Image (tube, rainbow, N blue to C red; front, side, top):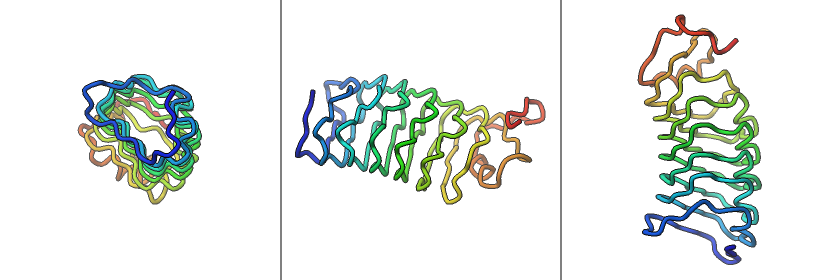
Length: 193
């Protein structure tokens, strides 16, 4: 176990020894920790309550670290988190309640992953989100979901098979306008029924 009672920033960038995913207890007594940057590592599966003991983290970067799976409680207890980036990983899906305790989250970057769909109520508890980046993923359709009014959604360079414009809000149409390829939505089953 690691204990970081007086540390405010942890940087693990481009190290020759690759770190595996932290486990519950690695951040106990880290109540002064504000920034965690773990980049270019081999984290793979991120379990529940990993950051327990570090409730004041505001910036968490887990980019290019081979993440494949996230537990629904991976970020539990990070109520102070404002920026979360997990770009350039191998994430295929997001648990329904993954972001529910991130009540102060302002920026989320999940670009360059393998995500193909989103849970319907994924952002129900994130009313302060200003930017959400899902560019360069594998979306085949975007589910009808509650869109935050003042939030910028980036779905650039995705293959969006079903935009269903007639049942999609203007905000969502703008977010989808830069999809890489569009297939006639009339040829597909309406995913918004």
